[in-house]
Length: 172
Image 1 (cartoon, rainbow, N blue to C red):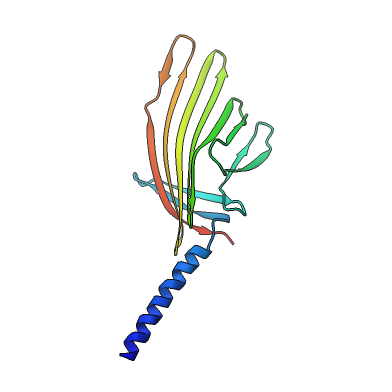
Image 2: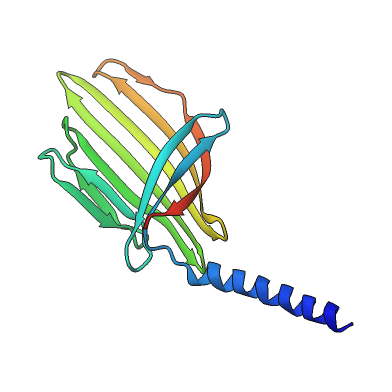
């Protein structure tokens, strides 16, 4: 009976240590891994988080200057001119943070006019992060549409939805 009791206590302590390890780990620094979509396509990603645990949005403006902005609250808006011209706008629409979990919803748009033609794209993305004993599980759900045309005709693209998921490892 004593051996069974000790084994049970050891198992309980092990599980408790796993929970403490996961909750003690935090969403800071860099994480890297591969995301896979339903069609089997894969993409290498690296996600950076601020010391406060908020995701960092990285971009390069038309002058070639790299910037990072901490995404930390609903209503946050970022607007800049990317290389090649046009206007890129991004708005944080939802933000939920819990212990070992983070969810950020973003609406992004891009517009560029050139020689009488207008190129417009919009993307809605939900980024979900959850700490697990194996690393950081990341799930991205996007829905995008595009329109291209001139003053006489607008050609709309079909909406395109993508879901990709993967396990990221913390960079040291």
